[in-house]
Length: 345
Image (cartoon, rainbow, N blue to C red; front, side, top):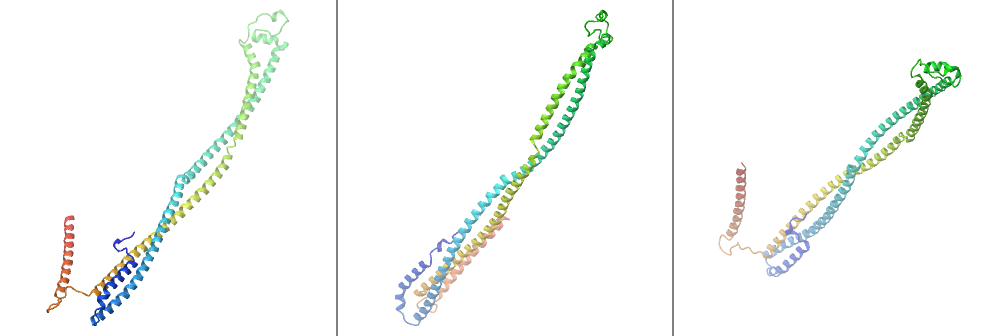
C-alpha cells in the first residue's frame, strides 16, 4: 500500500543532504559579514532549527507508519484466518448439519409408521391365533362327531339302517338277506359317510398346524420389538440436535468475529492511509524547507539586474509567465471538459 515512491527516502538521507549543503555553502557565506549576511544567517539558523525539528517529526512519522504497517499485516492475517475458520463451520453446517437434522425428522416419521404397522400386524396376528384356536376347537368337535359316526356305522345294531342307506351292509355274517344287494335309499351316501368319518381328522391336523404357525409368527413379531426403535431414534435425534447446535453456535460466533475483524481491518487501513499521507506531507514539507535553505544560502537571483531603474522587471516577467502557464493549463482542461460534455450530448 505504499504510495508516492518518489518520496521514500528517510530522515537520515535528508540530514546527510543538509550537512553536505551546509559544508559546501559555508565558505561562501562566511566571506560576507555585512547586514545582508547577518539577516540571511538569522533566517538560515531559524530554518535550520525548523528543519531539525521536521526531521525529528519525520522520524516519528516513519516509526508510526512502520507500526501501523505491522498492525495492518496482523489484522489482515487475522481476518484471513477467521474467515477460513468461519467457512469450515459454515460448510460443515451446510453439508452435514442441515442434512442430519432433516434426516432425523424423516427417520422419526418412518419409525412412527413402522410402529403403527407393527401394532396393526400384532393385532391381526392375535385375531388369527384366536380364529385358529376356535377353528381347532370346532374341528376337534367335528372329529369327535366323526368318530361317533364311525362307531355307529360299524355297530351291528345299525347294519340294516346302513344297508337301507347305502345298499351295502358293513356287517360280516348274519342272515343271507343281509348279504343280498339292495337298492340304496340315498345314492352316494356311502362316500358321504366315509368323508364325514375321515375328513375331520385331516381338518383337525391342518387347524393344529395353522394355530402353531400363527403362534410362531406372533412370537417373531413380538421378538422384533419395533417399538424399541423409538427410544433409539430419540437418542439419535438428541445427539444430532446437540451436534447441529454446536456447529451453529461456532458458525454464528465465527460470523460475529469475522465482522469484527473486518471492522478492525478497515480501521487499520484508514489509519495506515492517514499515516502514509502524513508521512508524504512531512517529507514534502522537509523538501520545501531544505530547498528554501539552499536558496537562501546561495542568495543569487538571476532575474535581478545589476543597474537601471527596472532592476526587478525580469522577476515580474517571470512571475507573469508562470501565471500565463497556469492560465493556459486551466483553459486547456476547461476546453477539454466542455468537449467531453458536447460529445456525450
